[in-house]
Image (cartoon, rainbow, N blue to C red; front, side, top):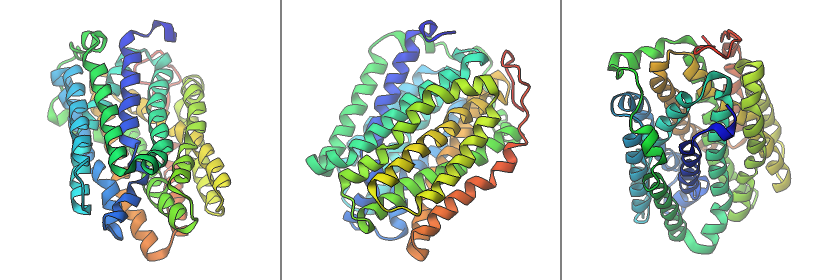
Length: 399
């Protein structure tokens, strides 16, 4: 299947995902700075960033059950509505505790939209093109994240925090309108999956799948690094210790887009040709090495360059992770499997800022780099446990 053969709903879903992630990330990379501005200190800074992920951890796996029971369209629409509501409430944040609570509310929408849309895409294409389809979808989603990160400092510098929150609200409202007004997504997803709805026991039972648990460990470690080190510690360190302006911090974070865009157009197809496991190993070892290297530099140009390369290596993990998760189980369990994958995705994003903020407070910044790299390297031996059939024509190619 070439891209020309993909239905219009696929491309529209990519656009909606781009705008949704753009709105989410427009202030997220510098939110730790905002939390300090309104009085947060120590671990509370980490909680302010992690608040968004609290509700996501709880709802990712149930979203797979819900989509198997009610179809794809309704849960995705509900998720987008919650994202809009969360952005409205962000306009009224004035103290750290309220920020944590609103961020948690804001996070309720993501599992219903992103997890369900990924399940829909996995079922939309056959195994031989699944890496490409997921890579492009996640890549476009990630471009929204990176553009939001890049522009975050500039927008807040120009419009203030309220202006940044209002811009995020506008983007999420546009995403919702594009989802519900055109008929393409509604027409193709309202029917939902053809299999019988999952039972609660089936959802929990997939946690016994060995391959899925390996991907869970890899994902947890990668997102502790991304959310805890890069999005929390590095932004504060760059602003307060290295003296970077908010705009420079945003540009530095945005450098990841360069590497990830390359990964988006190459690593998914590459995994379709040579297998998922080599791509995962490349991502883990490459990212861990670059984190240690980055800890030795202090200039905007060098840190940005290394972050750009990390975008490529970590992008390999992002693209392959959900594909392996879906392929490790039977077709009717894919929604639950992707929900489980995203639970650990969210878990890393939840505990990462808290852990890294605590380490930074007690031991300084450098140990945060070493801890993030070490956690990723620990998962490397487990990746070798994944077995691939090498036959992409089958429905289950990893176990």
